[in-house]
Image (cartoon, rainbow, N blue to C red; front, side):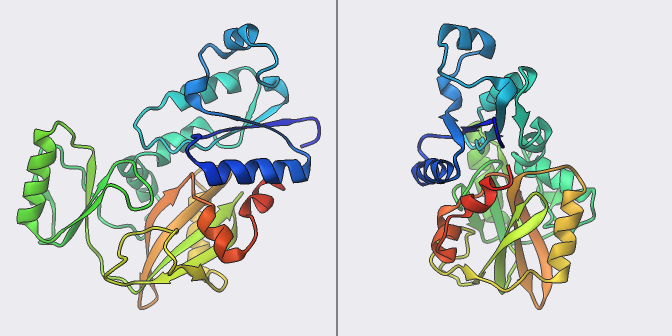
Length: 284
């Protein structure tokens, strides 16, 4: 990226990622600027006039949006759009974040590929008869990460109680899925369509929630052909920069859990004993 600047938009609470991004950028000679969406007022051109030198020239900038959107505030999308209008190159299009940020929107997006997905329901009107299962179930917030906002419900009575509670609180932003027994959970890290990391953990009752920071995760062998086929199919939908695909498996049968556009790097770094950002930033 000779002559280019890299702007990463992320939350300042992501301390490990920020420190690694600064460390690797310095090592690779990349001119890095880190911003949080709330630090920037729009339109960007007026902000840059008010604070000259604070931000690099958009026409000489590569822009990476690393905001997951778990707060349901999509202001980061407006910031990214303004950078793009002024000439910055976005590593992920605005549509990529739109398709994958909400879990149900992602489900509908991936369903067009006829992938092995978990049946997923969005029930703001509590139509339990739509659910072809008696339980157990998993309720997940539309947006979330590291197992936060995930609840296991043993039967339809518990599901009804949960939906009644959330509805009474005025928050119906949950998806419902049948709980699926599995042997292993997998995470593939994908960079520009190529798998650069495969991690696996064995199922246990104690750690049924998906969370790569859990110490039970370990480096796995090369992804099998079915996994690679699914990666290729997902790549056909649109170009994506750096992301993760999560699977569960039982008796060699794979099910896709989700696509994560802002995967954490601390867990993979600890397992691989090197910074995954060195791989990521080397292809910019």
